[in-house]
Amino acid sequence: MDKHEQSLGLDLDKGAQRLGIDRKRLETMFPTLLRDQENIPQRVREARESSDYRAIEGWAHKVKGTYFYLGADELQARAEALETRIREETTAPAEEIEEFCKALQTTLDWIRGQVSD
Image (cartoon, rainbow, N blue to C red; front, side, top):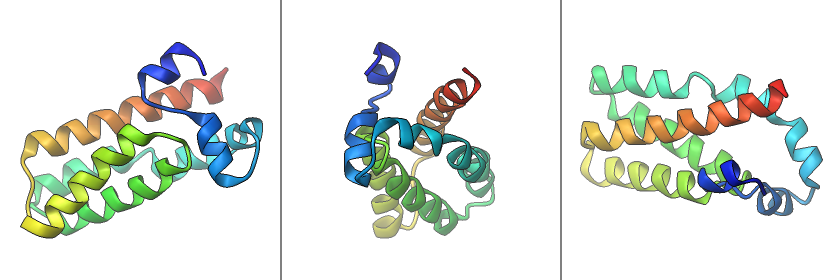
């Protein structure tokens, strides 16, 4: 695990173990992950602008599940907290939503860098 990976709260070795594959195989999945996930921060922000908290809850749920398999426990916990808040309160503070978007975008940027290398 490199320092930047660690600073993002990623543990790809743990993620690979959760999937029952090796790390190299997990890394080959990054392009597909990017195609599937790269627009989520934008979509969440758009949903926030239109007060579509159910859509945000759905995106948070998707992120929670996906990033469990990357060993991204911090991002997964942030997604789960957002999903739970919206499910229980039908809303969430704009700051919490934005922090979720930033954390996800930072992780996606790192993954994109791995694909480019």
